[in-house]
Length: 214
Ligand SMILES: NC(=O)c1ccc[n+]([C@@H]2O[C@H](COP(=O)([O-])OP(=O)(O)OC[C@H]3O[C@@H](n4cnc5c(N)ncnc54)[C@H](OP(=O)(O)O)[C@@H]3O)[C@@H](O)[C@H]2O)c1
Image (cartoon, rainbow, N blue to C red; front, side):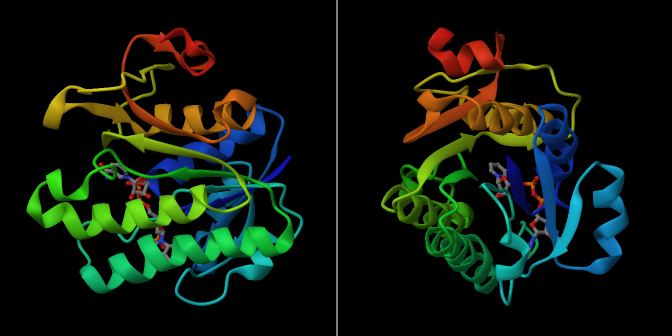
């Protein structure tokens, strides 16, 4: 499949490109600056320009699936949370519906299920993630929504935990590499379609966890 990665220059995005290629997919790395093209190529992706606050439509040409892992980041304000995490994500979902790109994996966040229960500074972000995921769930697309705990740049372990509750509270973490590997595995695991999956570091090999072995 040709898989467009939205946020390909980000932490998870960079981990996704080589893993998609290794799994036999054709990764397209959607970035917002041409200076990032070479890094996308180095990781086995075809670079294309796309800005969630502007035009990104052409970046989806020929795609069979999208993995959305963009984010406005913790150093920007609520304006970018609205424009990127909420509106940008919704616009990508709508563009996929318009173009008949049926498969969509969204990297959401732990806490998006109940934003008011999250730490106060994070609530606007959690609301944005929740509303974007709701829009995807309510669309006609074959969706999988991943809700990872806090991300780290530690080396991937190839194992996760999909524990339904708890997830280790505020201290639970997961390497970005393992979130990326899980997103790739979701594309090849039909039973993840229509699912919202909480995700943290753990002991169960990713493919087995997605098959229900956790
Ligand atoms: N941080 C956490 O602990 C945590 C926990 C749970 C879930 N998440 C979610 O996990 C995902 C990936 O997180 P991460 O830390 O790997 O991300 P990241 O490194 O912050 O990367 C986010 C990417 O989004 C891109 N982006 C921002 N605005 C954009 C726009 N207007 N148009 C196109 N691209 C844009 C950035 O582009 P540039 O490279 O050009 O800046 C960047 O490459 C995000 O959706 C985040 O919300 C994060």
